[in-house]
Image (cartoon, rainbow, N blue to C red; front, side, top):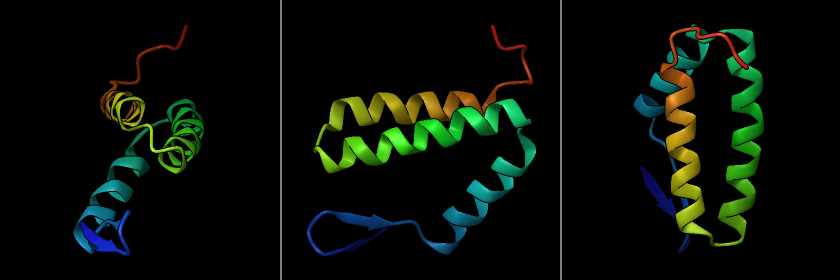
Length: 72
């Protein structure tokens, strides 16, 4: 990741490509969940809530690797 300024980090091209590849493989339900989670992650980053952001990143990762399990 590249740092801009004192807090902002950007993913490099390889990380972006990996995310896009993974995102393309998930189902529509998972995409809706991820969209909501990413918006929450951005809000947590703005509030400097690192612990909650890390928990949310773990939730995003679990959503991306879910094997099309039915949502309850």
